[in-house]
Amino acid sequence: MTALQKADTAPRSVPPLARARAGRRRRERRIVLVLVGALVIVAAFSLAVGAYSLSVPDLLRTLTGQGSQSENFIVLSLRLPRLTLAVLVGVAFALSGALFQTVLRNPLASPDIIGVTGGASAAAVFGLLILGFGSVATSLAAFAGAIIVACAIYLLAWRGGVVGYRFVLIGVGVAFMVQGLLGYLLSRADLNDAQGALLWLVGSVSGARWQDIAVVAVVLLVLLPVIRLLSGRLRALQLGDDLASSLGVGAERTRLLLLVIAVAVAATATAAVGPLAFVAFVAAPIARRVVGTGGLALVPAALVGSLITAVADFTAQHLLPGQLELPAGIITGAIGAPYLLWLLATSNKTGKGA
Amino acid sequence: MTHQLRAEGITLGYDHTPIIDGLDLEVIPGAITVIVGANASGKSTLLKGLARLLKPEAGQVTLGGRNIAALSGKKVATVVGLLPQQPIAPDGITVADLVGRGRYPHQGWFRQWSSTDDEIVAAAMAATNTQQLAARRLEDLSGGQRQRVWIAMALAQDPEILLLDEPTTFLDVTHQIEVLDLLLERNRERGTTVVMVLHDLNLAARYADHLVVMRAGSIVANGAPAETLTADIVRHAFDLEAAIVPDPVCGAPMIIPIGRFHGRVSTAETPEVWQSKPVRI
Image 1: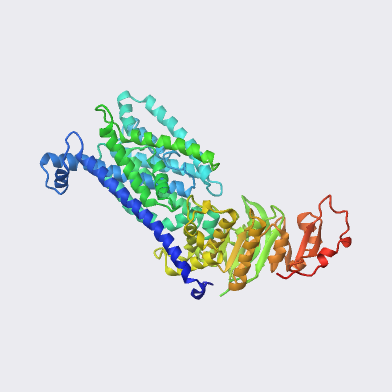
Image 2: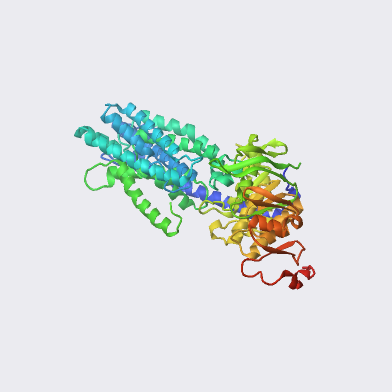
């Protein structure tokens, strides 16, 4: 059916095209390799350094199952779950942010800015403080909170379709409401309970349990291939609703599907570790800026996300003065907030707005 | 295989406010159809309806005799392509990447990219003279280059019927002609059916095989430019007094708008211009 015949394509014009594509791929692959390398180094530090530090040979020995009892306990039972969880939630938050930002075509659209992770927090704190939930029930409440808030924003933003900026504005409004609810819950609570809730609210990977890790890992294992399959539609959706539809991608349906996936991923990660501020917000833009080809850059974004959470947790544990150990969410917040300011400043300058 | 695209009594609008009410239109296969009309006369809305972007509240759009709403979006996209008036591109996208995205409807869930895709993208870029821009970023290009890239993307989609919403807006006159020549060439060489909205009546009359004049959501004239662009129809559709003379270059009707201040000289006194012979280039 194609009107184009092979005979009248100029074969000499294929090479520059193939070369351009190969160049884009090569650049992305190189950046992925660098990021993986950086992640391995951070992981090695996270596993080896601490109150009891190991040498590299000792670490390798322990990881291959030949360590002493105390080394096994410290590395495999204390540090490895923590690192694994940090890496997995980094991937989850980053992908969620990348999907939100791409689907809504707005750099401010990320689950932590528009109140999706805030909804998870409010529900979790409600469970912890009012209903006296245990950890599993708190995670479930957090998951439900994220879903409820996301649905509320979607419905409020719906006007025969969903437009990115309206979704973001309503999401920011909802985020404030959720903050108000949180403040109310915390002010009513017993001081000791409130302190526990506050730790959860900042977001921390300490005390990671393998069952949390398994949940996040399973959700990612199921949804990553789905995201991969939908990446063609996502690329079409980047060109605007009209062009996407004209390329045969049902814009509204695809957007809803991708938002559901993004919310599920963010909700799972928040349920496991609390709302690690700004990871979802900064990971994808950093990755895209580094790759710089206008592609989706989902793999680099996921790696940047896990690198941020792993570095943040390591910094929170070891690199701050004093013996004080902070939750990782404080560090990610400290990275993210200046980026938000920078984004607002520069996008105003170019007149693109939010 | 040629597909007939036809609007049958369609009512189109947003939020239940009809912009187009009960409109019939038969797109002539292999011809260039140009839609003209005043602002807000429903031109873009009609294009969106024809391209399955907007679902009719009444009536139906048929492609090859079948209701387009019942066909899969991807299937329609292999036959009908639409280039919107102001398409959006992600930051930093390169020309080759963008043009390549036009291949989406021809790709399956698992078959991602083939050498045929490469050849068609290369041909689309050659036809629009954008090969040299392949590795450049879209945002670094001039307006004329950018529009050629978008058209390359639409050509890479390889549709039998290509719909374009004001493809020449924001371009200077040289680049307007360049874009229209490109589309004419595509039409004459490959038989691609072209339906486009244009604002410039003179260019519309020159490039159209078939002209559709719209006013307030209905078609007021439909046919060859020489029959449809009369002073009466221009007055009716645009609320504009105009003198119509033959275009000295190709003989198509040419509209001279009169306005409130320049109608004092009778057209009968200035015959030299329109009596001059068509110029050969």
